[in-house]
Image 1 (cartoon, each protein chain N blue to C red):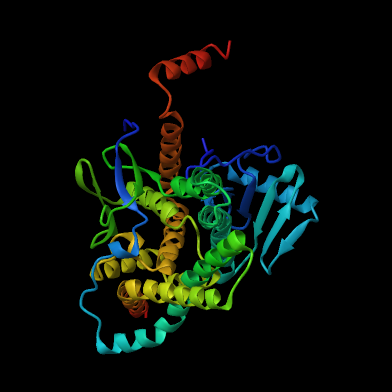
Image 2: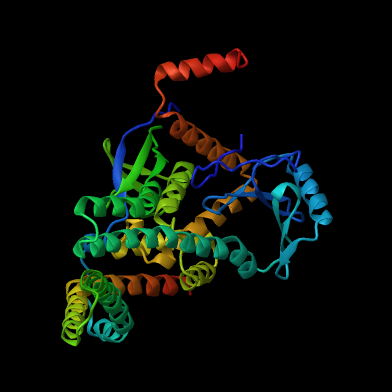
Length: 332
Length: 114
């Protein structure tokens, strides 16, 4: 079941090293607390697994970890590459800043660095075309072609990361994409702390609980896809830690954002947005660890279904029926 | 629940010019804070506009004529500076509102945390 990232719905990949958990190319685990995460290769976020049988997988991870010497570490967190290219992150007894720096700091800064290449290609294309056509080195048509060649990776990257599939409370999956002011807003709510207001074709919808958590994760995936600079990430960690509690941080942001006309998460400062992503992540795991594993399973289920829809939405009914037929016949 | 591909709604990646107006308006203290804060932002924006402008026209000229004259260099430098200042003049009020709004949000978050 657990094949898709909870946040960006990308495939998590597979490994043939951990027999009890053959999913993911990077696994993180905390033996003392019995936690196992799959780290998404695309958005770098950690997906907590709701496995009842996770102990076997953790024991296997520990055995593999003991066998390898290829390691990098801070005081309490160790990264090891084991056979088959699988990366293991072993969590000891880190302080909150240390674990946060491992979980979010590097991932968010990496995401920021990763968008530099397509941006540079885009700028090279635009300025290159301007120079070459003005200097009459190439004709206008060739210049446009050249620009398209360089700009394509950047444009594709922006197109791909600027839209996200969100499950609406009425069960429909909606593509949220570029442009608009108040289409998706975070609002303070006395009972649950915060709600999400979505303005779609069917009018205004307010949602809270698991659907809101899932929708918000999807939205933040798109809004924060480029991560942040080190200073923004440090500020985000500091804001969350100062609030003392992740739920409180989200509720505070919802209240403060509404007060200042920034209910649309895109109008929030970058460090507050990154803090929101970190807090949502921590908050859902805290609920799961308090015994509400059902919530986590629901989230995985939603992620799988949304990913399934994304995979299948461009296939016609007849193709789908044929595929179903092949599955039934065992591929004959 | 029954899921389908559904419709799509507009939403993300709004621009600076789509941000809501600052309410309440900036106070004197906030404007004083902005006078100090804006310097590195202005310098960065100026360079980001002026340098590519200058580079594009210099390279264009080199490719076309294979020579530079002092007069042309001065003219291009002045045009690049003008482009940089123009960009700043067009954007400053929106950037000021955004920076003050962000400061208010951060201040309120820190206040509610303590």
